Length: 114
Image (cartoon, rainbow, N blue to C red; front, side, top):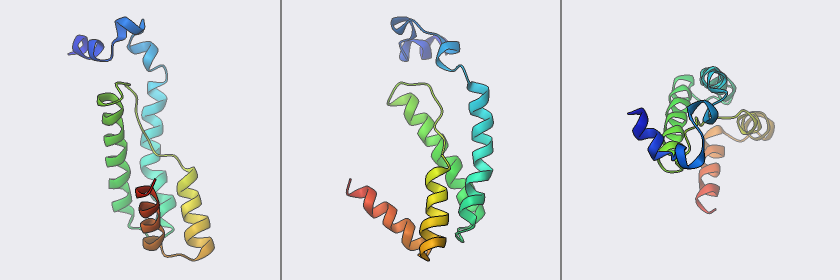
């Protein structure tokens, strides 16, 4: 299985290996575990259900990681960042007083036009 993956990611042609491709893999795993709890904690302040945001964070990280490997052929992990979550929570929802449902719908409508 490992040899097939090395062939798929073209390690030999690129002159690389698993160690070179993922030097901070332990840090990535810890960061992903940390994000699973911190991201929902930030978004909970908007009124979003904590369990739903935990599930969405995990699904998006998993799907993003699989997509990076399968489509982009780049064996890496994708994870959420805090910058936009904090902006969404503290500026848009709490600062401007926009309900989280409206703000989230606006995010999706804006993204679909890009």
